[in-house]
Length: 134
Image (cartoon, rainbow, N blue to C red; front, side, top):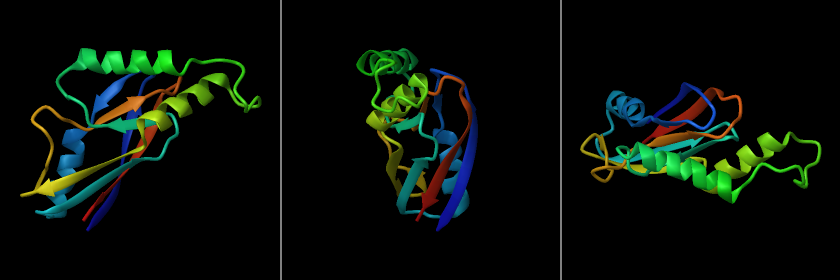
């Protein structure tokens, strides 16, 4: 079993393909058949497993999230920054974790699937992703 934290520098409204970095950990773990669980620690960051090749589709997903959850000043938490509240809701809607099967030492994904990190935080930052391989 291996548990590690990866750190990524991110920018607002960007999507990052982090499949290779997670696969490197799978390689290092020596696990041939098992499970990989990836969790984002930061509230404005989401994880997903869509097509890693369709970067315009990534933009569409981000645009749709902004349309679905608009930044507004009437959130119930009136003490919070509206941008932070909207970012946290978008990430929660998409999800903070991804679970993947490991088969023959490789993340068992569809032909075009990849593990993508979505940054909704207005300022971006150093985002931490925890990876557990067993």
